[in-house]
Amino acid sequence: MGAATGAVTERLDNGCRVVTEVVDGARSASLGVFVAVGSRHEPTAVAGSSHFLEHLLFKGTDRLDAVTIAESLDRVGGQSNAFTAREQTCFWIRLLGEDIAVGLSILGEIVSDPALREVDVNAERTVIEDEILGAHDDPGSVAAERFFELVFPDHPLGRDPLGTLESVRRIRTDDVQRFFASHYGPENLVVAAAGDVEHAAVVKAVSMWPTRAAAERDDGDAPAPALARREVLHASTEQSQVMIGVRIPPRNDPSRDAYRVYDQLLGGGLSSRLFTSIRERHGLAYQVYSERAQFTDAGCLCVVAGTAPEHTERVVELVGIEVDDLAGGGATAREVDIARQSLRADALLAVEDSSHVMSRIGGSLILDHGVRTLDETLERIASVTRADVERVAQHVAGSPRTLVVVGPIDDVADGVRLEGPGWR
Image (cartoon, rainbow, N blue to C red; front, side, top):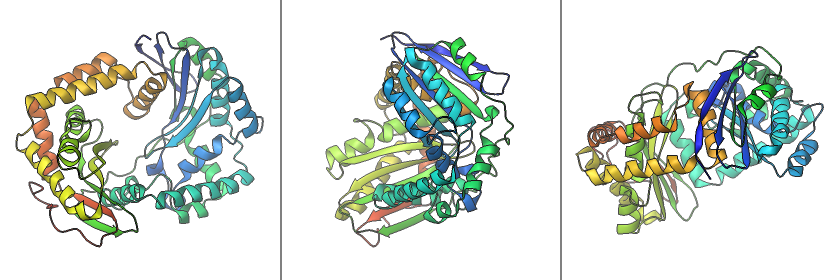
């Protein structure tokens, strides 16, 4: 299978933006409709509205019910799903390139004219309540939800995109109908297609979607500066779930690629600092890694680990040791090069998968208002220096820390300082 050939973007007369990328040799076509609205754009009283709509749109339209949609996709071996994030919502379909018209027709109908029937709203409310309850039973989800609440206090970015049981129970049919009418106009949509696709054919299909006014996306105020926070949530689990992290710059910051390399070096791979220390050398965790989340005006980087309760404090201590060593210039040229090469390989391998390509180009256009070429991505990764990584590492080590632990313990000793330069 060959590589992707480069993205082509176009804004249509109806306001919708289209981005396509051919993957040479692909038989599949991956289609996605990205909507410039997520949980941060919801009124507090109806938090979870974006996620509610994610469920409801595949319930169909007045012309296409859910069974007809499912049968149409099964007939061509198609797959469909959706996700809701803090700054975007996406509905996607993957099927053979020869059947792309089927996918475009279904996506066009559900994002343009969903039925949003009261009977479906009431049925999905129960499903979403069960989804939230399931998340409450998962210590990893509980830790992540509380971590975001503490990192972005009293701000919509700190809310779980699922909403709460209370807010979901408050949402009525007219609430989701108003939210849809306000945010799902074509000018708030990006249609992405990758794989065995033709740009002109996608444009022709999407240009037939109706024009409808929608409110301009309003991200609201930026989050207030982070404060050092620590919280231990007692839970009757076998493991302790640990999350510790800091705020980092937003996604459009010039340091974005340096954070990617730092994240990879710290906890992104089998040779990363955290994996080598905590799992391989000390044998204290099966799962340990770091991850980033970068938004329009803020971001965060955190370390995640699951460990036996009696090892919780030692794991937190070992995380601090690695963070401080990297901030003190401990990253070797070899480590930085391995991290860069790993990210390079990830980028090159991803262009062989139409789903990955669709997600990348659609997400980039909706959030960054542009799409990097593969060469640009590789050049930026390659340009990150050891000094760049050290500057990022010093920011991480010097920023106020948030620590959340969920597990069968009542407290964690102060093995890691949450303020000031250095975690140890």
